[in-house]
Image (cartoon, rainbow, N blue to C red; front, top):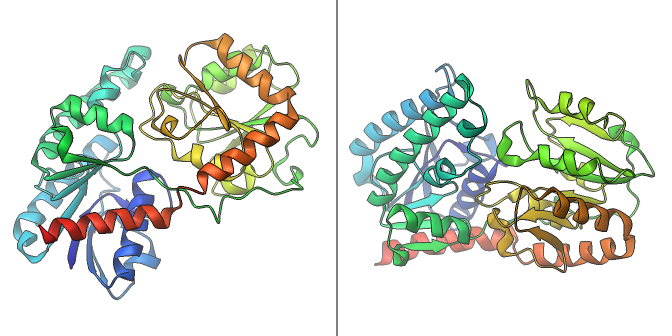
Amino acid sequence: MKICIVTSSVRKGDGQARVNYEIVKEAIQRGHQVTLVVRKAVDEISQHKLVNCVYFPVDKVPTELMRGFVFAQKSDRWLKKHRHEFDIVVSCGAVTTGESDVNVVHFVHSAWLDSPFHTSRVNKNLYGLYQWLYTSLNAYWERVALKKAKILVAVSGTIKKEIIGVGIPADRIKVILNGVDVDEFIPIQTPDRSQFGLPEKADLALFVGDKTNRKNLDSVLKALVNVPDLHLAVVGNLEKSTYPQMVKSLKLEERVHFLGYRSDIAKIMQVVDFFVFPSRYEPFGMVVTEAMASGLPVIITKASGVADIVTPDCGVTLTDSEDILALTSALKKLSSEKSLRREMGQSARAIAEQHPWNTKSCEYVDLFESVIGQ
């Protein structure tokens, strides 16, 4: 089978890139030839004898909006010339406007644009205007791409509902939940926090996210005020964000520990007590399953696609991302009841073990093979 995958990146990174990475690994293990039309791909994949990479680097193009547009145009033109060479073409969302056999959907821009928490509604400035334009144009390109695809894969039940909202019949949509690396993300018995400059004996929660208001760090900080013995580690790029100033204004400097962007998140998850991620809109939330695999209880919201697998035995699912009292209650519960925390962490690990990457990649390649067989 000759597979063409059009995507931005193939690596062990964010959700879309990691799904691509696992799909390619499974495809070449089965002996299929894979052509990647990409911006970037890790050497482990790009240098394999069964993989051919067609690069359209756009790093020098200003703004992510223009980078996405230029890549989509170049990949579309390339596909028109070479489509006949492949048994199946796979794409991701609006990464190309060309016709694909399977489109794997990780984010629905029209749903995020409709959210009352969209950045343009919160930031009434040039940044907010840019975010409105970025989401609006991607929502348009996305609709075009999704309607051209024969089969759509949603990475959560939430995404499936949103795709249906775009006007795609439900019988064209298959759900394959994102997986988790249960070998990289593991619990440990004797955590050493000193390597990260974190307090050794304090109850410690972890938040992972960037400066976008979608991740909802502001609500976590407001709730933290009411849990005086709890510390919070924050991982993510918060450059030019207002959060450090917010920490000062709430007098939380001694209890909030900004660690910046980290590539060793699996190690950090081994030294904290639980994970808090009350996102306002989250198509899936791979970082949540990584926390679960690390044996951590989790606090999430119904707005996260990962809520499909988070049970009361392993975490707290908040109905309203803006309910500070409910978030405070959840923080207090997990910081004060250590035996419950331990039991929930064990349940979280057990659930994560039901979703390893190798089973997900098999589902994808099985799907590709069935499409060709039709």
